[in-house]
Length: 261
Image (tube, rainbow, N blue to C red; front, side, top):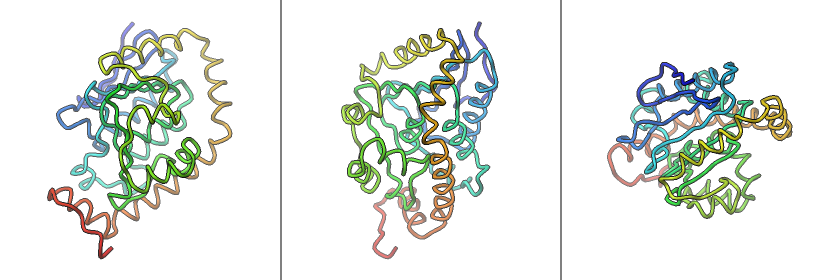
């Protein structure tokens, strides 16, 4: 049986054989995520959590692009001013989601396109995948508890390089540090994620839920606390001169000048 949720055209969802697939569908804008898209993804996760027909969720993009991160123009029009903002709803939803989460990543995965993967259980990537965390370059700080999870995953030196410099790293590095499970050609990634999701969906849900809960238990409280702290800092820094300069430079297609901030 296949069912669909009512979501904006930029986010496609359907449920089949126990698997909900959430597809970023804004390829012409490099799958840059708007406030409406965050809200739709948060709603999809909430629906999946409470729907007994859903046993696994897959998040995927296009074989050429996973996500360019936040849509900057939309972000400036709809800044996340409270913890109820759609982006924070989505982050809380994905970090606490109790059922298995599988991601299929091809092409660039920028900002939240990378940090959301820290909350997935299985991640498969195309050999064209490139991960980047340019928060400092935008005058901001990390989100999604990545300031805690990345040093834990990569070790402090590599996490510092990724977060302080914001330079991309490729699929081979992501595999080496344990961010992803496997690298395949881009045309095969989504299909591989679906096959693995179907394997999970065939297993006893109670066992999946309890196993994931036990694995996540040690970090759950820290992740929630760090995410809230990051959110507060992020909102404050968004109003400060460095972020205004970074976003202004982006919109004006010039290099930012941080010499006075």
